[in-house]
Length: 299
Image 1 (cartoon, rainbow, N blue to C red):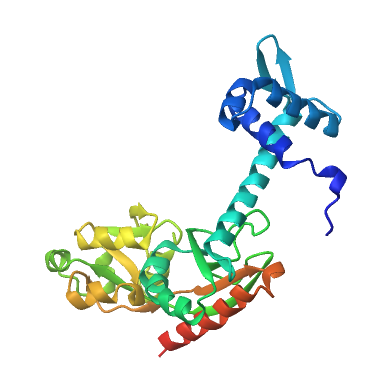
Image 2 (image 1 turned 135 degrees about the vertical axis):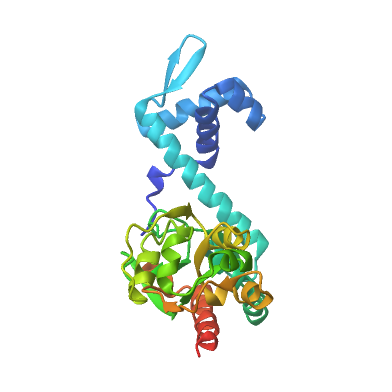
């Protein structure tokens, strides 16, 4: 969509307004921008002339935003931040593209990050920026090219590539297993259980798969798998952990399976992206690469 130039004030006017709005002071904005107070005041007045309405209420020696001015200030600040981020991305990689990727914390640190050097080696012109997300979000509001998603393929406004399934196991410390002497899945009902906030029914599903009626499953709530694994290692309880993310701890014996009870999770991992980014070359390259990495993990 073409930009309507008459609705696009100059950068100097917008910068002066953003600083004045943030400080609620023309004097403080002038100090930040290395201008005089009268220069900032003139720029604000010029922007108000463009808009056809006042942005600030001027009361003696103070100024404060109007209600409409507060909304405009927030939108201008977000737009300037987007420009700043785009400029930073370009300066970091002027010869290639940038892929802004949202990742699930433990999946990102345990599985994706160790493999990313391979992607960068294959695609030296692409810079990958990572941000952590625990839940789906609105691609219309977030400046992200793609995201790793776990669950069902029901992200509105997004396209998804299936990556992999996961198998979870009930894991705990060797000492906790020795103290409780677990013999059957039902024995875990009496143990301290660690629950992931994003998967509140995981233990109920596991018990059901084991043929055990889960009667009021209780325990500690934890927001990330990595924290749950640390708590389990410390003997605080039994956690349902994806085996492929914690193979090292299980191999070393820091964690052990409370009882044999591997169960495939109901959801799966996906790469999600907004439809408008479908043809973006860095995303296309990443889709091909991560699909091959996920395929190599499957038995």
